[in-house]
Length: 131
Length: 247
Length: 82
Image (cartoon, rainbow over all chains, first blue to last red; front, side, top):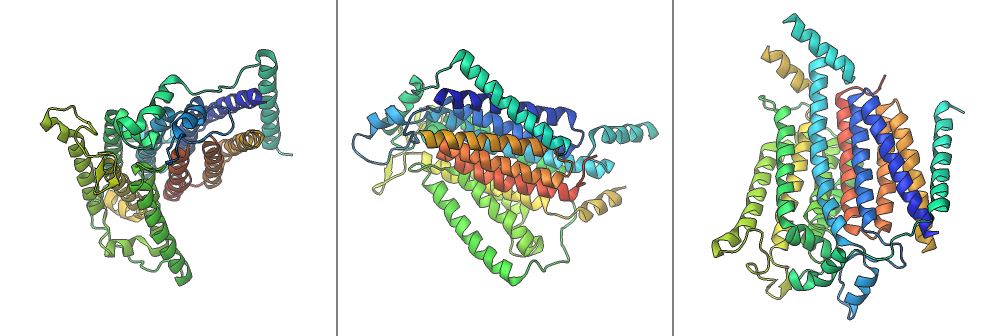
């Protein structure tokens, strides 16, 4: 049973990543590309956390609460803290980078009047040709 | 049934059948124990860092240098975003009326609760799950709540301008850098924790520099995202006038 | 253990459904809402995977700040995709 859920986990995350890559590459709206990018980064973060998870009952976070004999219990039942620490910073940095992209999208709309990627490029090229 | 629903059903059936086939053919074992590296961190965090929270210990001590550089990326990304949408004009809006007084009172209570919890998350980051990053993002949500309910102008009247928020962020990041560099004057490496900073202050566990890092990162993240929110809520007319006036 | 596995399965299927609708939706505001729903199901996954730090950060960032960011961007640009 654990094995099946483990496989399902990997398959669903892979399909999620493929769907969002489809959204990034084939959708023409820049805002839709931004939404797909956030979904892709979230999927990658969850799959990194999966690396540190153990299919065992019970699983506890790697935090000491001050009970005696806790260390052996945590070594046996605690989840891996290293992937969690790497993802923790990644989420916030990802938000900052996506905010930068969002400002870029708004600026493209201000200059060209559209958020469609192909039409925005066409408008920009025409402006350059006129000059 | 529309084409979308049929596509979804095909996708779901495909996913479940791929998972079943893989499970039956390969019969993979789900992981039952943590890697040795993870065990090392769990076993030694109270001794090396004197923090009961292994995640915060890794973020600010074992991998402290990584996080400092990631903070630089955070800084540069937000500076880039704000630089794109700077206005030379002074922003002053005519509308001061937000939503009704019921919404205002409700928002006041909720904002107070969120701010309290954000501070608790950030300042207890070395003892319980949490830290500077989640606390700062939680505090930034309050600005996103206040802007639609109370309008941007009322925030500007209170003195919460984006210039001041950027100044707070710069100061917090400078302090964070100082905390990282200070051990160098005693001949230690940068981002040294317990050899330089005390683990207890007045009988309270602060885990060396972890508490300071969490505090400054909290301020930096909160003010950075609050500045992003303020810039996003400036109405487009201001920019249209700016583009027209520039020509 | 069985409860954990059921929660995993439900949240995974839910995230797949939300992502499918978010990617195929033409109305960008609805797509942002579906994206928030996907974030909720991922937050359930993260909490069940014994990562409370990440669940906390993720809820604040992905349900709160991303949704607000997307709504601001959509309100400043156009709502419908062609």
